[in-house]
Figure 1 (tube, rainbow, N blue to C red):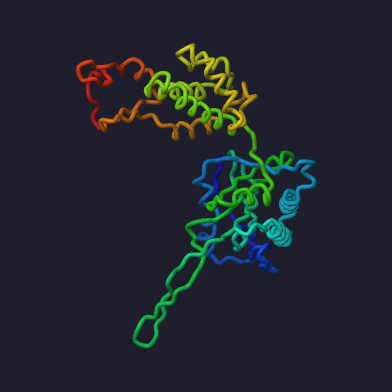
Figure 2 (cartoon, rainbow, N blue to C red; figure 1 turned 135 degrees about the vertical axis):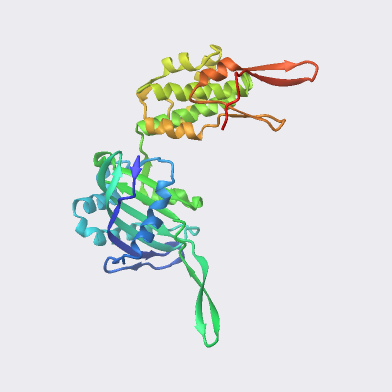
Length: 352
């Protein structure tokens, strides 16, 4: 989990990067930018807001031969070792970005390279390097007094509410290629940003495995449990799956299947579905791993626990107390009305 509220900008370098394939040039600033007290909180929020709102998927630098040949990894390492060289190294980052900006669809824009202190990751304070790019310009109005009237002036600039592209490189796990977060609002050129420029792959840690396994289970529930059983069982399967993860420190697949799948006939279906679909989630060979509580909490929030009926009625199931749904909700078929029904038992209505 990250905490960016106390992050401090120690160095900011700004360059402009054109599109190489269109013969657009680049502009390198010769010295760092000195932020005013008024501008600092606005710029900091512009850079970091998207990362606070983003689901945490970490990446790390990778190279087919060895990390020592990864240029951006080497630049980041030099900045972490000697923060005073951050601006000079930022020019190398700008050059790397320019060289990879060769597709006609890639937009020119401003590059910001930031050295942060007091960034918190997993309850540990550390430094971080931010690489941000603004591409899209917004129209805005300026007003100027002209004799007896106000004159309208149309200008273009960067919208501080939306960061186009960004990466945060945390000074952690250097031997594995650091831990990195990335955001990209303009997804048409994500491959260029992640693969060609950053040169990263997904950081396969406990958080990644937990989150992806639960996503896989969610699709199994929708594609297999629901057609074989019903919507209630789909919801209850995910209820049991999340609770299994929440109460265990380590995942073991055999124990998971025996506890979570009520219908034994679905166990071979689960294994077959995993062979077919697991590569998408990079869990095909995964049967044991430590469980990340952070990922479980995030997954619980994203999983739907509501049964929507075509009669404009919703039944919301409780993920905290799943035994209630098992004991007090029944599904049946009414011959006279030729309709399904849910029977809900209760003692009294709770007051809001």
